Amino acid sequence: MERVDALVVGSGIIGSFVALALRERGLEVMVVDRGGLAPGTSRSSDGNLLCSDKSPGLMLDLSRRSLDAWHRFAGRYGNDCEFDPKGATVVARSADEARGLKALVAEHQARGIDCRFLDSGWHALEPHLGPETVAVGNWPNDAQVQPMLACYQIARILRDQGVTYRFYEGIDRLEPRDDGVTVTLDGGDRIEAGHVALCTGVWTPEILAPLGLSVPVQPRKGHIAVLERGDVVVNSKIADFGYQAAAESTEVDETAVQTAAIIEATRSGTILCGSSREFAGFDMAVNMQTVQQLLADCVRIVPDLARLRVIRGYAGLRPFSPDGHPLIGPVPGAERLIVATGHEGAGHGLAAVTGDLVAACVADGDTHPYEGRLHPERFQ
Image (spheres, rainbow, N blue to C red):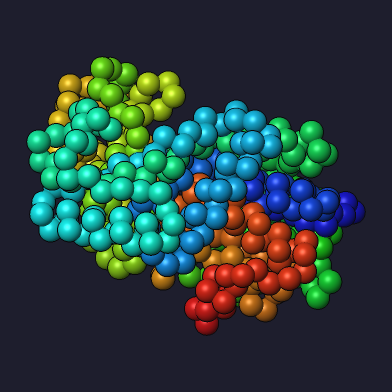
């Protein structure tokens, strides 16, 4: 029977950074994923690393810490993942929105975040903003990463350090004990792990259910449309001021579809347009009506996007938690099982700090500084 200090289930961006943080602390690590590398939510995301869409509080604190860790990652391991601190531009299209945006900028500035409010001169930042623009906020240090390249880069780093990846093997059974967890893969192999970190997003409840354990995470569907290369310049991450409210919303309405504009250019020159949020179970089919609505939102912000053709659209599932905060910590009733899920649309932005927090639980045998507010037992 194979033995490891820590077994990480899930090879998306959360599992990747958790495995990296554990390995950096000297643990013997294995990564298991029933699909290939990053087959789930990470594959369907846009790689946002943002502070600009966070209200002051826990999520902003985590995002700042994680963005700093992304910079350290690129400095230590190189930038093979298109990590790009291109900044973010938030657009207000009414006087009320401008007042709200100005207040948000002031609150962020009071916390030492580099940002500014502009009620004129914004075309120097984004030349294609439309005539409805009343004011903008600019966060020059917000960033973007190519989601799959980030997971591939970390996998190469870890494999070079002796970490085993087992793809296309799912979890058949977990047997937690006081001193570890016996893991049976669906092919029959058994692994003894000191700890198991479940970085399995919306699929975490499915894995815990046979143990009679649960976490309140459910899928929240989102769409992205990809536009062809063209002459429309998008320098930063452009978002409608209403995007923040959509991203932070915790209301569960299974009949509603929320859309709010967020626009970004990729290194290859295509333009990604989002976003949408809806509760539709595990359905990942593209809804063209939703795509049309989010494109209309984006064209209101940047009218020249209407000249570009849509190449494709895709959908993914964000792991939603009831209070809008991730669940990071031991599962109540099985202390050697650690969950890291519930990041909703901020998975890439919070991945680096999540790795550090899980490593504090596992490698350091300690609580992490946010445990009281992120521990899964807060919902019991």
